[in-house]
Length: 252
Image (cartoon, rainbow, N blue to C red; front, side):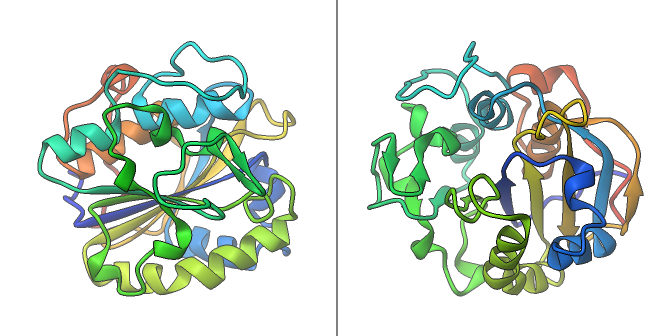
C-alpha cells in the first residue's frame, strides 16, 4: 500500500517505558484501546539512551552528536518542522507547563526543554513553540503537524503509567475520534525504554486509513520520521533517508 497524504498529524511522545510495561497493562486502558483500534508496532526501538538524543533523532534525523540530556543547545541543520514550513505546511510544538510561548529556558517546574527538540533549532520560529494550553479545541484549526509533549508528571517520566494513560485519554481522545473521519493521524510513541528490553518501546499509529493490527516489521525513530515525511509529502532528512517509510498499515 502507498502511504496516504495526511491533512493533520499529531505526534505525542511519552517517557521511559518498555513495550511490555505498557502494552497489555491494565493500568493503561486508553493506550491499549488505541493499540487495538490502530497499528501497533511490536518491534519498535528507540535509537539510544538517554532521552534527549531520541527526541532529536525523531525530529531531525540525527542525534546531533548528543549523548546526554544537557541543555541548552542550538543546531543549524535540517529538521522536520523547517522542511514542512518550507513546503507550505504548518508546525507547532505544544509542551505542557511551558511558561509562555517562545520560552527558551531549560526547565520550568515540570516542563523540560530537553523533551521539546524544536526549541533547539534556529530555523523553527519562536511562535511555533507553544504551551499545551494553546492546543486548539477545534481539531480543524490544528497545524499540519503538531508535536505534543506532556510535562514530567504526565509523560510517565515522574508520574505513573496510569497517570499518563489518563492524561492521554482526557486530552487526545477528542482529536483521535475526529481524526478517523478527517484524513488525520495520531502517532503515539516513547522516547526510550527503561533499559529492560533492549530499547523496545510502544509505538501506535491510528486515525484515517490505518488498518488495525499488530505489525512486526522493525521500526526505529528514524523510520518513523521517514513515515511522517512520506505522509506529509516531504523529502527525507538525515538518517531517515537511509530507510523506507511504513507502507503496509494503510487500508487504502
